[in-house]
Image (cartoon, rainbow, N blue to C red; front, side):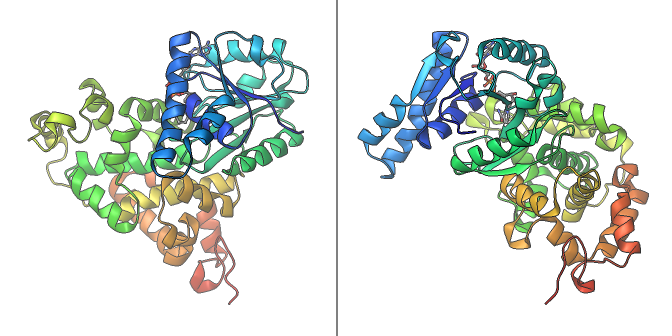
Length: 407
Ligand SMILES: NC(=O)c1ccc[n+]([C@@H]2O[C@H](COP(=O)([O-])OP(=O)(O)OC[C@H]3O[C@@H](n4cnc5c(N)ncnc54)[C@H](O)[C@@H]3O)[C@@H](O)[C@H]2O)c1
């Protein structure tokens, strides 16, 4: 299906970014929110993104105005009733999103598609409230969408292959990297990110290393930023919401480190309120007695510090990625691509599964078994990893692992 006219519902952090991305590709887009102030804020965000391009000499003011003409602000549904595709980006509340999907279903032509930018809610549960579940799909952009290339395209139980193909090619026309991810809680990237962030929190809580030492080690490993800097930038509240979804879906291996609860009680949300795992603004660089106090409160349950190594954070990601493969959430190549583009896994290491192959799957398995003995069942090796090793698919050295190595 040819997608010409589009609309985005919700002009907040993500909605405005998505509308900018669509207008940048040359398509008209309606940006709808509950009131004019919210719409104006969203239009302001889009203008700022374009203005930065002008300031860097990548676009003229004239071009900026032409792009802005493609974006129409709206507070009612009138101007979006002929849209071929509507992308919903309202707050992460199932009842609210379902209400919007019902309204859109009544409003839009039968042929129109409805996508959700949800980070964690079920696409099937959104499609289920419409008479067109075959036209409902997840289109998960990452923040900031005008920079981040990855888009997870998530079919619900009844989404048609035609809709998936249309959305994959639409995302490509936006100059994005779309990856098909079959529906599972957390989809692919957040599902793999959280065990990594959680293990960093365990390391900190157990006195294995400080956030700064861990961040520096992970940057040394090749990540663009360390896990604590990442949580502070994403927002602790946003991460906690995703952690809760994963815990509910996958049980004990996603159990958040107790220090998450301590951080939540202290309302240290990260950059946005000036304090997270680090201090920001006027307090940047000052001694952090509050955080020290919190760490001290865990001392009695962990008198001897545990040991930190980058693999303690990377192996849970590898293990969860292998579980995703086992569940046919995505292909091995798409997993590598997504984790580089969505999580910043070092590209020089060829992607997370290429890295596992390079280390050797037998060694990955042995290390996970060692971690399981030391730290608990959250490291329990995935069944597919064991099958691979048992079959002699040990990775690069055996010329066969998650990929084949013929030369
Ligand atoms: N912020 C992120 O990093 C991020 C990344 C990926 C996906 N997401 C997902 O994107 C969605 C939006 O997140 P956000 O961070 O942009 O939220 P946000 O709070 O910044 O923006 C939500 C916007 O929706 C508007 N809204 C609320 N009810 C509405 C209604 N009935 N009709 C029209 N507009 C309405 C609000 O006024 C607000 O402007 C969520 O599902 C979230 O999980 C967020």
